[in-house]
Each structure stands twice: as structure tokens, then as C-alpha cells.
Image (cartoon, rainbow, N blue to C red):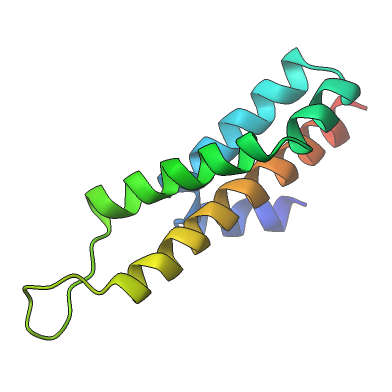
Length: 105
């Protein structure tokens, strides 16, 4: 567990805004909600849709990719980044909740 935390910091992955958002939301959820409420949140499609919208805004504002002509946007690559950022946030959300519960016992 300690090696995992050290590698999270040494790789610089902890400074990704979507991962920080997922960790913050995960800790917030564990502290403020019980298991039934968390299950209800995770079963609602609006949760996933809102994370995807945040990822779309993040990629469009900060992670734009251009084609070789440096004028037009590379939409397929950006769509892949949007999906990747969404998965990063959701995975960090779930794993941070598991980590907080593990430390709490």
C-alpha cells in the first residue's frame, strides 16, 4: 500500500486534475454518505454524465490536440482523451473510497 502511494506521487499522476477531483469526491462521499446513498449515486446515469461533461470541458480547455496542419482540431484523439479522463476520474473516485474505508477500520 505504501509503495502504491509513493508511486502515485513519484509518477506525478496525483497532480492530474481529474484524478484529484475523483479523490476529493471519493473522500467526500465516504465521509458524508452511507453505503446505500453511495450505491444510489453510482447507479444513477447522471453521475457518469456529469463526470463526462467535466472531462469534455477539461479536454477542450486545457488538452486540445491539433492535426498536422496545426489549425484544425483532431476530434478522434480528443474524444479518446475525454473517455480516458472520465475513466481516470471514476477509477480514482472508487479507489479513494475503498482506501478511506480501509484506513477507517
